[in-house]
Figure 1 (cartoon, rainbow, N blue to C red):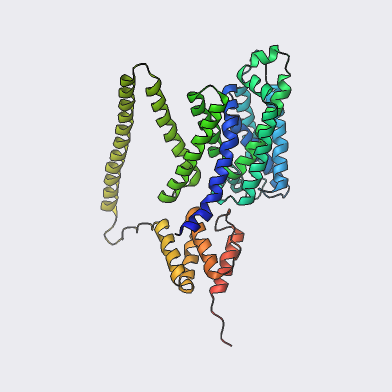
Figure 2 (spheres, rainbow, N blue to C red):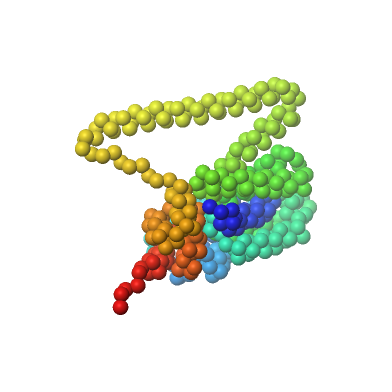
Length: 410
């Protein structure tokens, strides 16, 4: 695969991740200080419910109209969370957040049966498709997040006071519930837009992971923001490279790299800040060795048990029954098809269509689609953010077959 093709596919996703890190690192600091860690999951579920309600009225997901429905329900959720802020903390806000999440999730389940293909659309809403993000979506997110960031900068004093010292905010006569509503409303708008593109898991990690490391590093807001943003840039780049090299899903790969980065950073901070660094380093190495040994034991045990299972199955299989053939590596097959399309587009196009019909992983599907479009000299209308068995992509494959079909003799 050429470098230009790789950049064409991965650069929008990388820029979208950077935009997400920029606003979520800041909001994550508020979330941790307020001790409402799972509020983004609640808002994600509320937004999904709003999009699902819009779908019941015939409004497809990922449209401006569906976004309006999601934001409307998000505003209701923001009002609920603001009204449930008690000075004496009679009811923890996490309890209210969990209850709202459960109620909205149950309502969504009830509505799924009423919506055609509702389960598929709800899954799409919750998982996102960051690899298929396009430049207009990146630009929209950048504009919206910049507006939210400017709003928080202008009113930073009440927001920070409520997050860091809520009791002092009440004593100063600040209208805490009003400012809570504005905070949760702006937060909900960010989460609604982010989840629509990236999915719940990666948004949650972008919100919490940089903030955790930032708080461990310093108690100054500027240093915390710079730490979170720096971590986000490095981790996003490494996660996307890992996803490409190992043929992994983009979001989970970035999340996994975040986990490793946090463990490494926590170990380094533990050693640097310990009074006796030698002893602290020894403990860190011992813990690392323990985890490595546990991982090695898991892998070794899995291989031994797997070998025993395959041997038992082989003895039970009749001699005339052939062993199942191993699955082809989609990455290798995609690279072979790309090389074949570059060498002889007419001869390799049919193989590319067969490959796409099998619905390969998204990254390699995009690679083959882009090269196929280049070889055909025309775009038959592939929908990048939909599976290959969707109506749009089935029509695109049929259009490719029509282009490949030799003309009938007169």
